[in-house]
Amino acid sequence: MTAPVRISIALALSLLVGLTGQGLANSRGMSAAVAQMEICTGTGPVILYMDAKGQPTAPPHYCPDFALMLLGALLPDAAAAPVPPQQALPVPDRTQPSLIARILSAVPARAPPALI
Figure 1 (cartoon, helix red, strand yellow):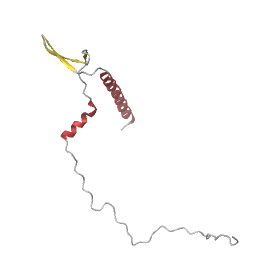
Figure 2 (figure 1 turned 90 degrees about the horizontal axis):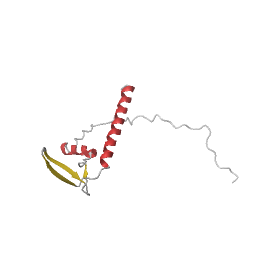
Figure 3 (figure 1 turned 90 degrees about the vertical axis):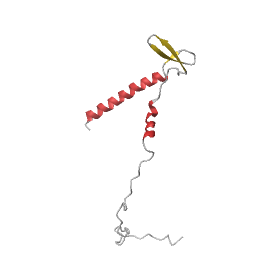
Figure 4 (figure 1 turned 180 degrees about the vertical axis):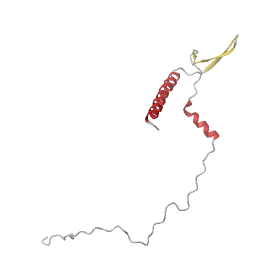
């Protein structure tokens, strides 16, 4: 992806999060609807939602945070696991000697002093 496309996508997503977050914050600050009242008018019935004090409020807000959890009801419970290969890695050849040799020092370690 080119840099201008990545930058524009990042800006668009940032604006989208900011705008939707503000709308959710406004709806969460309102009183919760605990009752509803149906008023019959000449054009048809109108339903008003009321809070605990009897004041009109907004309709109940259904949180979209867990809306994707509904997909669990439609999708199968578990995905089929892939079949593992019979032999994932090649078997090392253990008949060859080790190619890593220990480096021996030219000066051997000395013994403790003889006078002690």
